[in-house]
Image (tube, rainbow, N blue to C red; front, side, top):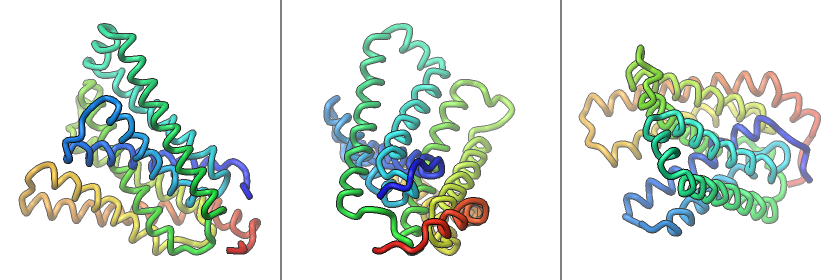
Length: 262
Protein backbone atom coordinates (compact mmCIF):
# COMPACT_ATOMS: atom_id res chain seq x y z
CA UNK A 1 0.00 0.00 0.00
CA UNK A 2 1.03 3.60 -0.52
CA UNK A 3 2.17 5.45 2.57
CA UNK A 4 1.14 8.88 1.32
CA UNK A 5 3.06 11.70 -0.28
CA UNK A 6 6.81 12.09 0.38
CA UNK A 7 8.69 15.24 -0.64
CA UNK A 8 12.01 13.43 -0.16
CA UNK A 9 10.92 10.87 -2.73
CA UNK A 10 10.11 13.71 -5.15
CA UNK A 11 13.75 14.83 -4.91
CA UNK A 12 14.94 11.28 -5.51
CA UNK A 13 12.57 10.95 -8.46
CA UNK A 14 13.84 14.26 -9.84
CA UNK A 15 17.41 13.00 -9.91
CA UNK A 16 16.53 9.48 -11.04
CA UNK A 17 14.16 10.48 -13.85
CA UNK A 18 16.44 13.31 -14.96
CA UNK A 19 19.45 11.03 -14.93
CA UNK A 20 17.56 8.40 -16.90
CA UNK A 21 16.40 10.88 -19.54
CA UNK A 22 19.81 12.46 -20.06
CA UNK A 23 21.64 9.14 -20.04
CA UNK A 24 19.30 7.76 -22.68
CA UNK A 25 19.90 10.88 -24.78
CA UNK A 26 23.68 10.59 -24.46
CA UNK A 27 23.64 6.89 -25.32
CA UNK A 28 21.42 7.58 -28.34
CA UNK A 29 23.90 10.23 -29.45
CA UNK A 30 26.78 7.78 -29.16
CA UNK A 31 24.83 5.22 -31.17
CA UNK A 32 23.81 7.92 -33.67
CA UNK A 33 20.12 7.23 -33.30
CA UNK A 34 18.28 10.15 -34.89
CA UNK A 35 14.79 11.27 -35.83
CA UNK A 36 12.25 13.39 -33.96
CA UNK A 37 9.98 10.57 -32.86
CA UNK A 38 12.91 8.32 -32.05
CA UNK A 39 14.21 11.08 -29.81
CA UNK A 40 10.94 11.29 -27.90
CA UNK A 41 10.85 7.51 -27.56
CA UNK A 42 14.40 7.54 -26.18
CA UNK A 43 13.48 10.22 -23.66
CA UNK A 44 10.44 8.20 -22.61
CA UNK A 45 12.60 5.08 -22.21
CA UNK A 46 15.05 6.94 -20.00
CA UNK A 47 12.20 8.35 -17.91
CA UNK A 48 10.71 4.84 -17.70
CA UNK A 49 13.92 3.46 -16.18
CA UNK A 50 14.15 6.41 -13.80
CA UNK A 51 10.50 6.07 -12.78
CA UNK A 52 10.86 2.32 -12.27
CA UNK A 53 13.77 2.78 -9.88
CA UNK A 54 12.17 5.82 -8.23
CA UNK A 55 9.15 3.69 -7.33
CA UNK A 56 11.44 1.22 -5.60
CA UNK A 57 13.07 3.99 -3.59
CA UNK A 58 9.90 5.92 -2.79
CA UNK A 59 8.90 6.04 0.87
CA UNK A 60 5.47 7.40 0.00
CA UNK A 61 3.33 7.02 -3.10
CA UNK A 62 5.19 5.13 -5.81
CA UNK A 63 3.27 6.82 -8.65
CA UNK A 64 2.86 10.48 -7.77
CA UNK A 65 6.47 11.33 -6.92
CA UNK A 66 8.02 10.02 -10.18
CA UNK A 67 5.45 12.01 -12.18
CA UNK A 68 6.22 15.20 -10.25
CA UNK A 69 9.93 14.50 -10.61
CA UNK A 70 9.58 14.20 -14.40
CA UNK A 71 7.59 17.44 -14.59
CA UNK A 72 10.23 19.19 -12.47
CA UNK A 73 13.02 17.95 -14.75
CA UNK A 74 11.29 19.31 -17.85
CA UNK A 75 10.42 22.57 -16.09
CA UNK A 76 14.04 22.98 -15.02
CA UNK A 77 15.36 22.44 -18.54
CA UNK A 78 12.86 24.86 -20.04
CA UNK A 79 13.44 27.49 -17.37
CA UNK A 80 17.21 27.40 -17.63
CA UNK A 81 17.22 27.23 -21.41
CA UNK A 82 14.87 30.21 -21.60
CA UNK A 83 17.38 32.20 -19.57
CA UNK A 84 20.08 31.84 -22.24
CA UNK A 85 20.33 34.11 -25.28
CA UNK A 86 19.89 31.13 -27.61
CA UNK A 87 16.77 30.00 -25.75
CA UNK A 88 15.24 33.46 -25.91
CA UNK A 89 16.01 33.67 -29.62
CA UNK A 90 14.37 30.31 -30.33
CA UNK A 91 11.29 31.24 -28.33
CA UNK A 92 10.92 34.55 -30.16
CA UNK A 93 11.63 33.19 -33.65
CA UNK A 94 9.71 29.91 -33.50
CA UNK A 95 7.27 30.04 -30.63
CA UNK A 96 4.85 27.42 -32.01
CA UNK A 97 7.57 24.90 -32.81
CA UNK A 98 9.31 25.49 -29.50
CA UNK A 99 6.05 25.06 -27.59
CA UNK A 100 5.34 21.81 -29.43
CA UNK A 101 8.84 20.54 -28.72
CA UNK A 102 8.63 21.39 -25.02
CA UNK A 103 5.19 19.78 -24.79
CA UNK A 104 6.40 16.62 -26.52
CA UNK A 105 9.43 16.35 -24.26
CA UNK A 106 7.23 16.88 -21.21
CA UNK A 107 4.72 14.25 -22.28
CA UNK A 108 7.50 11.77 -23.07
CA UNK A 109 9.07 12.27 -19.64
CA UNK A 110 5.85 12.12 -17.63
CA UNK A 111 4.37 9.15 -19.50
CA UNK A 112 7.63 7.22 -19.34
CA UNK A 113 8.08 7.89 -15.62
CA UNK A 114 4.46 7.00 -14.83
CA UNK A 115 4.66 3.78 -16.82
CA UNK A 116 7.90 2.76 -15.12
CA UNK A 117 6.56 3.55 -11.65
CA UNK A 118 3.25 1.75 -12.29
CA UNK A 119 4.95 -1.41 -13.55
CA UNK A 120 7.42 -1.32 -10.67
CA UNK A 121 4.57 -1.01 -8.18
CA UNK A 122 2.66 -3.82 -9.86
CA UNK A 123 5.63 -6.18 -9.88
CA UNK A 124 7.24 -5.45 -6.52
CA UNK A 125 4.84 -3.46 -4.34
CA UNK A 126 6.27 -1.26 -1.58
CA UNK A 127 9.93 -0.39 -1.06
CA UNK A 128 12.07 -2.88 0.82
CA UNK A 129 13.29 -2.44 4.40
CA UNK A 130 16.76 -3.70 3.47
CA UNK A 131 19.51 -1.09 3.07
CA UNK A 132 21.36 -3.09 0.40
CA UNK A 133 19.34 -1.83 -2.62
CA UNK A 134 20.07 1.72 -1.50
CA UNK A 135 23.59 1.37 -2.85
CA UNK A 136 22.05 1.22 -6.33
CA UNK A 137 19.43 3.87 -5.59
CA UNK A 138 22.04 6.25 -4.18
CA UNK A 139 24.46 5.64 -7.05
CA UNK A 140 21.79 6.45 -9.62
CA UNK A 141 20.60 9.47 -7.65
CA UNK A 142 24.15 10.86 -7.39
CA UNK A 143 24.65 10.13 -11.08
CA UNK A 144 21.49 12.04 -11.97
CA UNK A 145 22.46 14.87 -9.64
CA UNK A 146 25.86 15.13 -11.37
CA UNK A 147 24.24 15.28 -14.80
CA UNK A 148 21.71 17.91 -13.77
CA UNK A 149 24.38 19.95 -11.97
CA UNK A 150 26.48 20.02 -15.12
CA UNK A 151 23.46 21.06 -17.15
CA UNK A 152 22.73 23.86 -14.68
CA UNK A 153 26.33 25.01 -14.82
CA UNK A 154 26.45 24.99 -18.61
CA UNK A 155 23.22 26.92 -19.08
CA UNK A 156 23.94 29.41 -16.32
CA UNK A 157 27.41 30.00 -17.73
CA UNK A 158 25.92 30.54 -21.18
CA UNK A 159 23.42 33.00 -19.74
CA UNK A 160 26.23 35.17 -18.40
CA UNK A 161 24.91 35.04 -14.83
CA UNK A 162 28.12 33.61 -13.41
CA UNK A 163 30.60 36.29 -14.48
CA UNK A 164 32.54 36.04 -11.24
CA UNK A 165 32.90 32.26 -11.43
CA UNK A 166 34.33 30.03 -14.12
CA UNK A 167 32.50 26.99 -15.47
CA UNK A 168 34.54 24.58 -13.34
CA UNK A 169 33.62 26.35 -10.11
CA UNK A 170 29.94 26.36 -11.05
CA UNK A 171 30.07 22.62 -11.79
CA UNK A 172 31.77 21.92 -8.44
CA UNK A 173 29.16 23.93 -6.56
CA UNK A 174 26.39 22.13 -8.45
CA UNK A 175 27.90 18.70 -7.79
CA UNK A 176 28.22 19.39 -4.08
CA UNK A 177 24.65 20.69 -3.85
CA UNK A 178 23.31 17.77 -5.93
CA UNK A 179 25.08 15.12 -3.86
CA UNK A 180 23.95 16.75 -0.62
CA UNK A 181 20.32 16.90 -1.78
CA UNK A 182 20.48 13.32 -3.06
CA UNK A 183 21.89 12.20 0.29
CA UNK A 184 19.22 14.06 2.24
CA UNK A 185 16.49 12.45 0.14
CA UNK A 186 18.05 9.00 0.50
CA UNK A 187 18.29 9.30 4.27
CA UNK A 188 14.74 10.60 4.57
CA UNK A 189 13.28 7.92 2.27
CA UNK A 190 15.09 4.75 3.41
CA UNK A 191 13.45 2.30 5.80
CA UNK A 192 16.79 1.14 7.20
CA UNK A 193 19.88 3.22 7.95
CA UNK A 194 21.70 3.34 4.59
CA UNK A 195 24.97 5.08 5.56
CA UNK A 196 27.44 2.59 4.08
CA UNK A 197 25.29 2.17 0.99
CA UNK A 198 25.13 5.95 0.64
CA UNK A 199 28.91 6.35 0.93
CA UNK A 200 29.63 3.71 -1.70
CA UNK A 201 26.68 4.64 -3.90
CA UNK A 202 27.50 8.36 -3.86
CA UNK A 203 31.07 7.68 -4.95
CA UNK A 204 29.97 5.25 -7.65
CA UNK A 205 27.38 7.67 -9.00
CA UNK A 206 29.79 10.58 -9.33
CA UNK A 207 32.48 8.28 -10.74
CA UNK A 208 30.02 6.89 -13.28
CA UNK A 209 29.20 10.40 -14.41
CA UNK A 210 32.86 11.20 -15.01
CA UNK A 211 33.38 7.93 -16.85
CA UNK A 212 30.55 8.97 -19.16
CA UNK A 213 32.24 12.33 -19.69
CA UNK A 214 35.60 10.65 -20.31
CA UNK A 215 34.11 8.59 -23.13
CA UNK A 216 33.05 11.78 -24.89
CA UNK A 217 36.24 13.82 -24.41
CA UNK A 218 39.93 12.82 -24.18
CA UNK A 219 41.31 12.83 -20.63
CA UNK A 220 44.89 13.08 -19.38
CA UNK A 221 46.36 11.67 -16.16
CA UNK A 222 45.71 14.88 -14.19
CA UNK A 223 42.06 14.89 -15.24
CA UNK A 224 41.69 11.26 -14.16
CA UNK A 225 43.19 12.04 -10.76
CA UNK A 226 40.83 14.98 -10.41
CA UNK A 227 37.86 12.75 -11.21
CA UNK A 228 38.89 10.31 -8.49
CA UNK A 229 39.18 13.14 -5.97
CA UNK A 230 35.75 14.48 -6.96
CA UNK A 231 34.21 11.00 -6.70
CA UNK A 232 35.59 10.63 -3.17
CA UNK A 233 34.34 14.10 -2.30
CA UNK A 234 30.92 13.29 -3.75
CA UNK A 235 30.78 10.11 -1.66
CA UNK A 236 31.53 12.04 1.54
CA UNK A 237 29.00 14.80 0.79
CA UNK A 238 26.35 12.20 -0.04
CA UNK A 239 27.09 10.39 3.22
CA UNK A 240 26.74 13.62 5.20
CA UNK A 241 23.42 14.38 3.53
CA UNK A 242 22.18 10.84 4.17
CA UNK A 243 23.13 10.95 7.83
CA UNK A 244 21.25 14.23 8.27
CA UNK A 245 18.20 12.97 6.35
CA UNK A 246 18.11 9.72 8.32
CA UNK A 247 18.47 11.44 11.69
CA UNK A 248 15.91 14.13 10.92
CA UNK A 249 13.23 12.14 9.08
CA UNK A 250 14.07 8.61 7.98
CA UNK A 251 14.62 7.00 11.38
CA UNK A 252 11.32 8.33 12.75
CA UNK A 253 9.34 7.26 9.67
CA UNK A 254 10.96 3.80 9.63
CA UNK A 255 10.01 3.28 13.29
CA UNK A 256 6.44 4.42 12.60
CA UNK A 257 6.00 2.09 9.62
CA UNK A 258 7.55 -0.92 11.30
CA UNK A 259 8.79 -4.05 9.52
CA UNK A 260 7.40 -4.93 6.13
CA UNK A 261 6.20 -8.34 5.00
CA UNK A 262 8.50 -8.71 2.07
